[in-house]
Length: 351
Ligand code: DOR
Ligand code: ZN
Image (tube, rainbow, N blue to C red):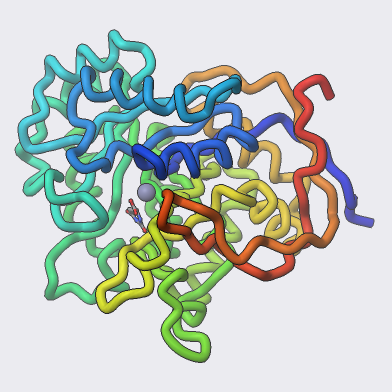
Protein backbone atom coordinates (compact mmCIF):
# COMPACT_ATOMS: atom_id res chain seq x y z
CA UNK A 1 0.00 0.00 0.00
CA UNK A 2 1.42 3.37 -0.94
CA UNK A 3 0.80 6.08 1.64
CA UNK A 4 -1.94 8.67 1.14
CA UNK A 5 -0.34 11.17 3.50
CA UNK A 6 3.35 12.00 3.86
CA UNK A 7 5.41 14.38 5.93
CA UNK A 8 8.68 15.61 4.46
CA UNK A 9 11.32 18.16 5.33
CA UNK A 10 10.30 21.54 3.91
CA UNK A 11 11.68 21.62 0.35
CA UNK A 12 13.63 24.31 -1.54
CA UNK A 13 13.23 25.42 -5.14
CA UNK A 14 16.67 25.52 -6.77
CA UNK A 15 15.47 27.50 -9.84
CA UNK A 16 12.65 30.04 -9.96
CA UNK A 17 11.71 33.29 -11.72
CA UNK A 18 10.16 35.78 -9.31
CA UNK A 19 10.08 38.78 -11.73
CA UNK A 20 9.81 42.33 -10.38
CA UNK A 21 7.30 45.05 -9.52
CA UNK A 22 3.61 44.05 -9.27
CA UNK A 23 4.29 40.62 -10.78
CA UNK A 24 6.85 39.92 -8.04
CA UNK A 25 4.25 40.79 -5.40
CA UNK A 26 1.77 38.45 -7.10
CA UNK A 27 3.98 35.38 -7.60
CA UNK A 28 6.59 35.39 -4.81
CA UNK A 29 4.07 34.44 -2.08
CA UNK A 30 3.32 31.17 -3.92
CA UNK A 31 6.97 30.14 -3.73
CA UNK A 32 7.34 31.38 -0.14
CA UNK A 33 4.26 29.37 0.91
CA UNK A 34 5.82 26.06 -0.12
CA UNK A 35 9.56 26.42 -0.05
CA UNK A 36 11.98 27.54 2.67
CA UNK A 37 14.45 28.88 0.11
CA UNK A 38 14.65 29.41 -3.62
CA UNK A 39 17.40 30.22 -6.09
CA UNK A 40 16.12 33.35 -7.83
CA UNK A 41 16.97 33.86 -11.48
CA UNK A 42 18.56 37.20 -12.48
CA UNK A 43 17.01 37.63 -15.96
CA UNK A 44 15.20 40.88 -15.20
CA UNK A 45 15.30 43.71 -17.69
CA UNK A 46 17.90 45.09 -17.16
CA UNK A 47 19.55 41.93 -15.83
CA UNK A 48 21.01 41.57 -12.33
CA UNK A 49 24.68 41.67 -13.29
CA UNK A 50 26.25 43.23 -10.18
CA UNK A 51 26.20 42.65 -6.44
CA UNK A 52 24.72 46.12 -5.96
CA UNK A 53 21.78 45.24 -8.23
CA UNK A 54 21.33 41.92 -6.41
CA UNK A 55 21.15 43.75 -3.04
CA UNK A 56 18.43 46.02 -4.41
CA UNK A 57 16.52 43.07 -5.90
CA UNK A 58 16.66 40.97 -2.74
CA UNK A 59 15.23 43.93 -0.80
CA UNK A 60 12.29 44.10 -3.19
CA UNK A 61 11.73 40.33 -2.85
CA UNK A 62 11.76 40.48 0.94
CA UNK A 63 9.27 43.38 0.84
CA UNK A 64 7.03 41.41 -1.55
CA UNK A 65 6.78 38.33 0.65
CA UNK A 66 6.15 40.31 3.83
CA UNK A 67 5.96 38.36 7.05
CA UNK A 68 7.63 35.07 6.05
CA UNK A 69 10.79 33.13 6.87
CA UNK A 70 11.38 32.47 3.19
CA UNK A 71 15.00 33.02 2.16
CA UNK A 72 15.77 34.12 -1.40
CA UNK A 73 19.11 32.76 -2.62
CA UNK A 74 20.34 35.26 -5.16
CA UNK A 75 22.22 34.84 -8.44
CA UNK A 76 24.27 37.08 -10.70
CA UNK A 77 23.75 37.17 -14.45
CA UNK A 78 26.98 36.32 -16.27
CA UNK A 79 27.98 38.62 -19.14
CA UNK A 80 30.98 38.83 -21.46
CA UNK A 81 32.30 41.52 -19.09
CA UNK A 82 31.76 39.95 -15.67
CA UNK A 83 35.04 40.44 -13.80
CA UNK A 84 36.82 38.19 -11.33
CA UNK A 85 36.43 41.09 -8.86
CA UNK A 86 32.64 40.98 -9.19
CA UNK A 87 32.75 37.23 -8.44
CA UNK A 88 34.85 37.95 -5.36
CA UNK A 89 32.35 40.61 -4.22
CA UNK A 90 29.54 38.10 -4.78
CA UNK A 91 31.29 35.47 -2.70
CA UNK A 92 31.86 37.95 0.12
CA UNK A 93 28.21 39.04 0.03
CA UNK A 94 27.21 35.57 1.31
CA UNK A 95 23.63 35.94 -0.03
CA UNK A 96 24.66 35.42 -3.68
CA UNK A 97 24.83 31.67 -4.13
CA UNK A 98 25.47 31.21 -7.84
CA UNK A 99 26.09 32.81 -11.23
CA UNK A 100 23.77 32.14 -14.17
CA UNK A 101 24.92 31.55 -17.74
CA UNK A 102 22.41 32.54 -20.41
CA UNK A 103 23.83 32.13 -23.90
CA UNK A 104 22.91 35.44 -25.61
CA UNK A 105 19.60 35.04 -27.41
CA UNK A 106 18.71 31.65 -25.89
CA UNK A 107 15.59 32.69 -23.97
CA UNK A 108 13.62 35.42 -22.14
CA UNK A 109 15.80 38.47 -21.33
CA UNK A 110 19.00 36.81 -22.50
CA UNK A 111 20.11 39.70 -24.74
CA UNK A 112 22.76 40.71 -22.19
CA UNK A 113 23.94 37.10 -21.98
CA UNK A 114 27.21 35.52 -23.02
CA UNK A 115 28.19 35.70 -26.70
CA UNK A 116 31.24 33.41 -26.34
CA UNK A 117 31.90 31.48 -23.15
CA UNK A 118 35.67 31.83 -23.60
CA UNK A 119 35.26 35.56 -22.90
CA UNK A 120 34.25 34.58 -19.35
CA UNK A 121 37.41 32.69 -18.43
CA UNK A 122 38.49 35.17 -15.73
CA UNK A 123 35.11 35.03 -14.02
CA UNK A 124 34.87 31.24 -14.38
CA UNK A 125 38.36 30.79 -12.96
CA UNK A 126 37.42 32.92 -9.96
CA UNK A 127 34.22 30.89 -9.52
CA UNK A 128 36.13 27.63 -9.67
CA UNK A 129 38.59 28.91 -7.06
CA UNK A 130 35.95 30.08 -4.57
CA UNK A 131 33.40 27.30 -5.11
CA UNK A 132 30.71 29.55 -6.63
CA UNK A 133 28.37 27.38 -8.76
CA UNK A 134 27.69 28.14 -12.42
CA UNK A 135 24.02 27.61 -13.32
CA UNK A 136 23.70 26.77 -16.99
CA UNK A 137 20.89 27.41 -19.44
CA UNK A 138 22.09 24.64 -21.72
CA UNK A 139 21.00 25.46 -25.26
CA UNK A 140 22.97 26.60 -28.27
CA UNK A 141 21.56 29.64 -30.02
CA UNK A 142 22.52 28.86 -33.63
CA UNK A 143 19.23 29.21 -35.54
CA UNK A 144 20.41 26.49 -37.92
CA UNK A 145 20.25 23.91 -35.10
CA UNK A 146 16.85 22.26 -34.70
CA UNK A 147 15.15 23.63 -31.58
CA UNK A 148 14.70 20.10 -30.22
CA UNK A 149 18.45 19.39 -30.55
CA UNK A 150 19.80 22.54 -28.92
CA UNK A 151 20.44 20.98 -25.51
CA UNK A 152 22.26 17.97 -26.96
CA UNK A 153 24.43 20.17 -29.18
CA UNK A 154 25.16 22.47 -26.22
CA UNK A 155 26.59 19.53 -24.29
CA UNK A 156 28.92 18.65 -27.16
CA UNK A 157 29.95 22.15 -28.25
CA UNK A 158 29.94 24.17 -25.02
CA UNK A 159 29.55 22.16 -21.82
CA UNK A 160 32.11 19.39 -22.36
CA UNK A 161 34.89 21.81 -23.41
CA UNK A 162 33.94 24.18 -20.56
CA UNK A 163 34.03 21.51 -17.86
CA UNK A 164 37.29 20.15 -19.30
CA UNK A 165 38.86 23.59 -19.01
CA UNK A 166 37.46 24.11 -15.46
CA UNK A 167 37.28 20.57 -14.05
CA UNK A 168 36.63 21.70 -10.46
CA UNK A 169 33.95 24.28 -11.32
CA UNK A 170 30.63 23.51 -9.65
CA UNK A 171 27.98 23.36 -12.37
CA UNK A 172 24.22 22.93 -12.22
CA UNK A 173 22.83 21.96 -15.61
CA UNK A 174 19.45 23.64 -15.19
CA UNK A 175 16.05 22.30 -16.23
CA UNK A 176 17.42 19.33 -18.16
CA UNK A 177 15.10 17.96 -20.83
CA UNK A 178 16.85 15.09 -22.59
CA UNK A 179 18.29 11.62 -22.05
CA UNK A 180 21.53 13.13 -23.39
CA UNK A 181 21.65 15.58 -20.47
CA UNK A 182 20.86 12.84 -17.94
CA UNK A 183 23.71 10.72 -19.33
CA UNK A 184 26.09 13.65 -19.38
CA UNK A 185 25.40 14.40 -15.70
CA UNK A 186 25.60 10.73 -14.69
CA UNK A 187 29.01 10.39 -16.31
CA UNK A 188 30.38 13.72 -15.05
CA UNK A 189 32.29 14.27 -11.82
CA UNK A 190 30.54 14.95 -8.51
CA UNK A 191 30.78 18.75 -8.90
CA UNK A 192 28.23 18.56 -11.75
CA UNK A 193 24.52 18.24 -10.97
CA UNK A 194 21.16 19.07 -12.57
CA UNK A 195 17.74 20.43 -11.73
CA UNK A 196 14.56 18.91 -13.15
CA UNK A 197 11.23 20.75 -13.50
CA UNK A 198 7.79 19.33 -12.79
CA UNK A 199 6.62 20.16 -16.30
CA UNK A 200 9.46 18.29 -18.01
CA UNK A 201 8.65 15.28 -15.80
CA UNK A 202 4.90 15.43 -16.42
CA UNK A 203 4.61 16.24 -20.13
CA UNK A 204 6.10 15.30 -23.46
CA UNK A 205 6.03 17.53 -26.52
CA UNK A 206 2.59 16.35 -27.60
CA UNK A 207 1.22 18.56 -24.80
CA UNK A 208 2.06 21.65 -26.86
CA UNK A 209 -0.09 20.49 -29.77
CA UNK A 210 -3.01 18.67 -28.17
CA UNK A 211 -6.06 19.65 -30.25
CA UNK A 212 -4.35 22.88 -31.31
CA UNK A 213 -1.50 25.18 -30.24
CA UNK A 214 -1.10 25.25 -26.46
CA UNK A 215 0.97 28.36 -25.71
CA UNK A 216 0.89 27.77 -21.96
CA UNK A 217 2.86 24.55 -22.48
CA UNK A 218 5.66 26.38 -24.29
CA UNK A 219 8.88 26.90 -22.36
CA UNK A 220 12.61 26.79 -23.00
CA UNK A 221 14.26 24.40 -23.25
CA UNK A 222 11.21 23.15 -25.10
CA UNK A 223 9.55 19.95 -23.81
CA UNK A 224 10.90 16.92 -25.68
CA UNK A 225 9.81 13.41 -26.81
CA UNK A 226 8.42 10.76 -24.47
CA UNK A 227 11.69 8.80 -24.41
CA UNK A 228 13.41 11.86 -22.93
CA UNK A 229 10.67 12.34 -20.34
CA UNK A 230 11.16 8.73 -19.29
CA UNK A 231 14.89 9.34 -18.82
CA UNK A 232 14.12 12.39 -16.65
CA UNK A 233 11.64 10.43 -14.53
CA UNK A 234 14.20 7.72 -14.06
CA UNK A 235 16.85 10.25 -13.01
CA UNK A 236 14.56 12.13 -10.60
CA UNK A 237 13.17 9.01 -8.92
CA UNK A 238 16.42 7.03 -8.85
CA UNK A 239 17.70 8.50 -5.59
CA UNK A 240 20.83 9.82 -7.31
CA UNK A 241 21.99 12.95 -5.45
CA UNK A 242 23.05 14.68 -8.67
CA UNK A 243 19.41 15.41 -9.54
CA UNK A 244 17.26 17.79 -7.52
CA UNK A 245 14.17 19.96 -7.64
CA UNK A 246 14.09 23.20 -9.63
CA UNK A 247 10.68 24.31 -10.86
CA UNK A 248 11.76 26.95 -13.39
CA UNK A 249 8.35 28.47 -12.61
CA UNK A 250 8.32 31.36 -15.11
CA UNK A 251 5.19 33.54 -15.05
CA UNK A 252 4.11 35.61 -18.03
CA UNK A 253 0.95 37.64 -18.53
CA UNK A 254 -1.72 35.69 -20.37
CA UNK A 255 -1.65 38.10 -23.32
CA UNK A 256 2.15 37.71 -23.65
CA UNK A 257 1.68 33.97 -24.19
CA UNK A 258 -1.54 34.00 -26.23
CA UNK A 259 -0.17 36.02 -29.12
CA UNK A 260 1.52 35.61 -32.50
CA UNK A 261 4.96 35.31 -30.88
CA UNK A 262 4.38 34.07 -27.36
CA UNK A 263 6.87 34.12 -24.49
CA UNK A 264 8.49 30.95 -23.18
CA UNK A 265 7.68 29.96 -19.62
CA UNK A 266 5.34 27.79 -17.54
CA UNK A 267 4.04 28.99 -14.17
CA UNK A 268 4.04 26.13 -11.66
CA UNK A 269 4.73 27.79 -8.30
CA UNK A 270 1.06 27.60 -7.21
CA UNK A 271 1.24 23.80 -6.80
CA UNK A 272 4.91 23.00 -7.25
CA UNK A 273 5.53 20.39 -4.58
CA UNK A 274 2.14 18.82 -5.29
CA UNK A 275 3.08 18.31 -8.96
CA UNK A 276 6.24 16.50 -7.95
CA UNK A 277 4.40 14.46 -5.29
CA UNK A 278 1.78 13.36 -7.80
CA UNK A 279 4.44 12.37 -10.32
CA UNK A 280 6.59 10.48 -7.80
CA UNK A 281 3.46 8.70 -6.51
CA UNK A 282 2.46 7.67 -10.04
CA UNK A 283 5.88 6.09 -10.43
CA UNK A 284 5.88 4.33 -7.06
CA UNK A 285 8.69 6.55 -5.80
CA UNK A 286 7.16 8.65 -3.02
CA UNK A 287 9.94 7.43 -0.75
CA UNK A 288 12.43 9.24 -3.02
CA UNK A 289 10.61 12.59 -3.00
CA UNK A 290 12.07 14.04 0.19
CA UNK A 291 15.72 13.64 -0.77
CA UNK A 292 15.08 15.01 -4.30
CA UNK A 293 13.12 17.99 -2.97
CA UNK A 294 14.82 18.74 0.34
CA UNK A 295 18.28 17.13 0.71
CA UNK A 296 20.26 16.87 -2.52
CA UNK A 297 19.95 20.59 -3.38
CA UNK A 298 21.32 21.91 -0.06
CA UNK A 299 24.00 19.20 -0.12
CA UNK A 300 25.22 20.42 -3.51
CA UNK A 301 25.16 24.08 -2.41
CA UNK A 302 26.80 23.26 0.98
CA UNK A 303 23.78 24.56 2.87
CA UNK A 304 21.96 22.98 5.83
CA UNK A 305 18.76 20.98 5.41
CA UNK A 306 15.61 22.76 6.56
CA UNK A 307 14.32 21.76 9.97
CA UNK A 308 10.57 22.32 9.45
CA UNK A 309 8.26 19.72 7.93
CA UNK A 310 5.35 19.93 5.52
CA UNK A 311 2.49 17.46 5.08
CA UNK A 312 1.12 16.34 1.74
CA UNK A 313 -2.10 14.39 1.34
CA UNK A 314 -3.57 12.43 -1.54
CA UNK A 315 -6.70 14.55 -2.09
CA UNK A 316 -8.28 15.80 -5.30
CA UNK A 317 -8.42 19.57 -5.72
CA UNK A 318 -9.07 21.83 -8.66
CA UNK A 319 -6.45 24.28 -9.82
CA UNK A 320 -7.84 27.78 -10.53
CA UNK A 321 -8.28 28.85 -14.17
CA UNK A 322 -6.07 31.90 -13.60
CA UNK A 323 -4.37 34.07 -11.01
CA UNK A 324 -3.92 37.87 -10.96
CA UNK A 325 -0.44 39.00 -12.08
CA UNK A 326 -0.70 42.80 -12.19
CA UNK A 327 -3.58 45.30 -11.96
CA UNK A 328 -4.70 44.56 -15.52
CA UNK A 329 -3.11 41.20 -16.28
CA UNK A 330 -3.58 37.64 -15.17
CA UNK A 331 -1.59 34.47 -15.74
CA UNK A 332 -2.64 30.94 -16.62
CA UNK A 333 -1.09 28.43 -14.22
CA UNK A 334 0.04 24.90 -15.10
CA UNK A 335 -2.95 22.49 -15.10
CA UNK A 336 -5.40 25.43 -15.01
CA UNK A 337 -8.92 24.18 -14.29
CA UNK A 338 -7.71 20.57 -13.93
CA UNK A 339 -7.76 18.24 -10.95
CA UNK A 340 -4.55 17.42 -9.11
CA UNK A 341 -4.49 14.46 -6.72
CA UNK A 342 -1.96 15.61 -4.10
CA UNK A 343 -2.30 18.66 -1.87
CA UNK A 344 -0.16 20.50 0.63
CA UNK A 345 -2.43 20.27 3.68
CA UNK A 346 -0.32 21.21 6.66
CA UNK A 347 2.18 23.94 6.26
CA UNK A 348 2.78 24.43 9.95
CA UNK A 349 6.47 24.65 10.79
CA UNK A 350 5.72 23.24 14.26
CA UNK A 351 4.69 19.87 12.84
O1 DOR B 1 10.71 28.95 -20.39
C1 DOR B 1 11.53 29.72 -19.91
N1 DOR B 1 11.15 30.87 -19.32
N2 DOR B 1 12.83 29.42 -20.01
C2 DOR B 1 13.78 30.28 -19.65
O2 DOR B 1 14.92 29.96 -19.78
C3 DOR B 1 13.43 31.63 -19.14
C4 DOR B 1 12.09 31.65 -18.58
C5 DOR B 1 11.57 33.05 -18.36
O3 DOR B 1 12.27 33.88 -17.78
O4 DOR B 1 10.44 33.33 -18.77
ZN1 ZN C 1 14.60 29.53 -15.75
